[in-house]
Image 1 (cartoon, rainbow, N blue to C red):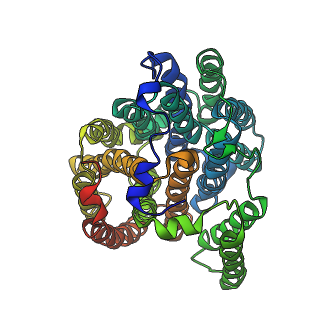
Image 2: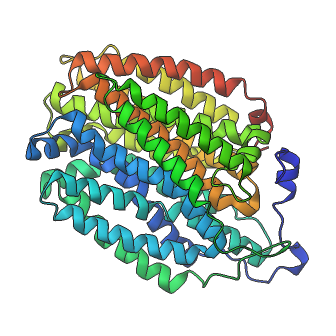
Image 3: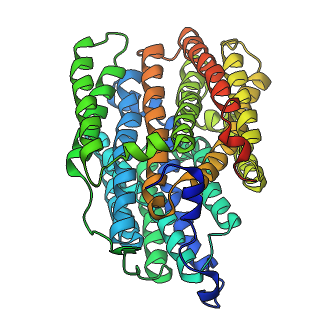
Length: 473
């Protein structure tokens, strides 16, 4: 697998145009279940943000404990996204898509009926695994449809997929606040059941059966999943999460097993014939590796606001869950509008630069807010993070399409989400360190200052990336 961008681009056309069938493909019935399934993971990553305080009060626990509801979903998703992407490439995306929806239904029932906080952790673990199937499977379905009709998936189709993910993440805090107000925090979990059931029925009826999995050299291997690599990666990430979630009282000894596990993972990935993470491909494909890094850092900043700012609005400012959801509405609207604008742009570098500058400015603004800050400033702070959320998602997805090998787009899309979830895990750790048992002004300012510093680094990473100047033209 070549790391050169021109070689990667050359692999994209897998069916000659003159042999393409007459059908245009990519019809609404094909994309509808893909869009519906793809909203579940981003929706659940943000929807719970306005329920954390209510859950903590119900079980008598603080912000440092409820942070596990964030981290466990991201931990599961960070591992499951590339794994299920590989499964979709090897076994067929329709099968993986449907199986994931079944797990989502089960997770919703477990969470809605959970008698203890531990059962909520189990629910979020299942939810992370189940929802991780949709996005890489959808990318693989579109790839297969492109092979059938002899052309690449149209940009508007890819834009709708991105819009569905971004839109659901953006409206998550508002929807979560509404559910907590109307039916209680258990509604955050229960709502997954009907949505997954509808998506399952639509997928069963409208997504074509998986075509035979094959490569240019013959039939694709059915089970090339690198279980040792998966195990090493998930164990190393779990150890890192345990260390990050108690930075106020760091367990330094955990860094030793983390370093050993990471070294073992790198050693094995360089020797495995079918590695879980293709280190050689990433090392030779600088633009794709930088896309993952940029995506992860961007979402670290976005989720600091999504979770940290909403908790401060409730505990530090005294707003209810419903009012907090409404206060986050400008951020949601800005993200939705800008995701559409980002999908219409041809370049990648300009929208990413604008997004990174706004992230930095928004973090700087949060260092100045307090319990008596005017409401208009609070709304502006949210909007400063909504615009980047829309632009970053569509632009980095376009970058993955630009630089990832076409035959492995499912796994590549999964790794993009893995980078996003590692950023989110780090964000939840930063929130736990800043707030401890209660979200107050000092904690918000600490979190915002760290975010502003990372924002400056993100701007530098973006404007100095020469590959972005040529991408999307």
